[in-house]
Amino acid sequence: MINDQIEVERRLSILVGLEWSGISRAADMLTLGFGPKREEKNFYGVPRQVSAWALHVQCPWALSEEGNIIATEKSLACSDEEANAFVMRLQQMLARRQPIVVERLSASPDCGLVVSLSQALRLVIATDATSDDESWRFFERQRDARHLVIEGGTIARESR
Image 1 (cartoon, rainbow, N blue to C red):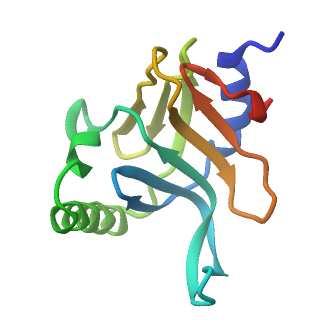
Image 2 (spheres, rainbow, N blue to C red):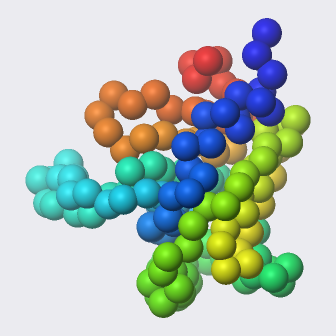
């Protein structure tokens, strides 16, 4: 039997040393990009820049700087206009501070995640073991890449 905590850390270890290179949202889902960017066409054929690795978060999370929380999932639980403005501020912060690099990461037994970044930034993701909804997913941005999906505080069956 696979230990979920160890497996999450093993699969996300690819991020250590990579740059945090993107941030966006889809409704109330936080989307983060890591690693070098490349051009990809969306389903309309329009080119866009995407990061090599993606982390999509749909559960409680907090981004802090030197221990002070600067954003949480509640930052996206507002009107589209307010959420877009919030993401734009984070994108500007990211651009001003380049490079922000993943220094280390650790998982909890319930597949929560702590991503320690350079410049005293830290992302904490807290899963909900009582819910069968997807908490977060991690994947390489290429066609047919295998996704690591966390549901109910464990690695989803299709991710094993």
